[in-house]
Length: 101
Image (cartoon, rainbow, N blue to C red; front, top):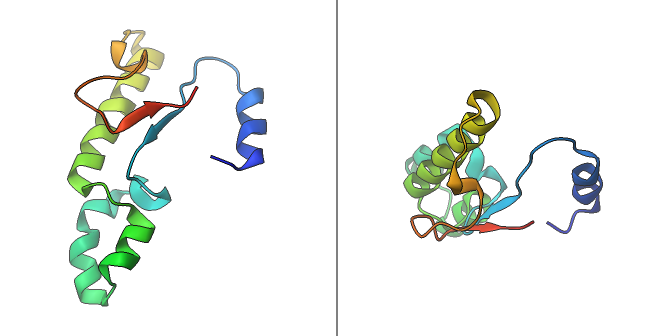
């Protein structure tokens, strides 16, 4: 992320944090209706290019799967105090994820 405000925020955060990137995702990839977007696009006459610009190029079902796994690992660590190696670095099951810092 090239947004300077993100770097400023990150430097002021306390406690555990991990910065990961889901390749092929766009900002709106992280909302609940991502899997329904292709069907909605047909009804709303949104072109595939417009859809990719908003949701990214990653398959919506794959994006949701990865988001669920990584969020669960994070909350298990923070709320249940259960360590997950998933948050330690790259995992062969999820090549779409890269660790930013």
